[in-house]
Length: 438
Image (tube, one colour):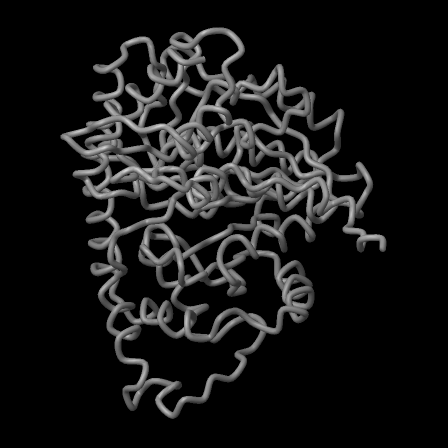
């Protein structure tokens, strides 16, 4: 009897690089005494107190769920959840009077909507999404799922750990060649941990206006920056005064996952200053009916927080991450000076490049699978392994032999400070052990 036939798309799918290590580790029969997972940005900190209060009191009289009834909200989300996203932006000094907010099931749903909204037809090369390599791997995956074309601006990781953009003239040449529908920028960069400056964002915005493109800002980490006296970098800091024509073509993707420590809540938003785009995006999302209403209620608590409380919370998160990120980077370079480690200016990630350390034909995926499937070293008397994300999937490059991610890894600063302090020794010792047996 013949077997049912899956689609070619399903047949070709492999796990996302950010989930690869965990999936392999789950299959491991004999597990070590301890595992430290920095392969995915699964924040382990408690969420905001106002959100926590609602989460723990869903049966209170003021809760819409007190009688056990859980109904759909409108497709665009509850007014309160929409106001929560606006209140955060307003507290940070941005004008929200012309912004349209659509609440989604996490930033991921927002990514899909934006790709559908700015790119050409499925299966065609028309108006692709332009990204800046390395880019968050989910954008590449969603574009493939939706049959939309992508094109990338290439960055290279220098020996100093910096990922530098090409000249604007080179970027414009790529735009002229491919005629993209929109440019995606992650100012507080995932995966590199680097921070764009507002002037660079302005120059990219000028190209978007000149070539009639949407400017898309993934602002999941907007409040997580570690330079002293740094002003917020955001597409919402741009205006027609400095970039004539930019208003009406801006879209941001927001989330409760990172700054608000609520990854599993799956709360996100698509925010735009183009009312027609928002209207059509909501129409597309009606097939999903609405975002998680309990999540909307919990996140909606932020609609009522003061500017002072919002800013104080954000500073608390910055202070927590900054010290830890700096120490881990210094520890990695101390354990193995030939490593290249990206500079921790923003977000909750760093990239480690081992190209100066390993033997030829090294493959980052093979090392990740080794650590997850069989590798372990003794740290403080405890047999331990480490889960990291290979960077190959963060580059939109078909030729694997030319993929810089072959020797690169992304680490997420999501474990406790005590566990993060073990990462440098753990990574270096596992790498040496792997290379010795290869």
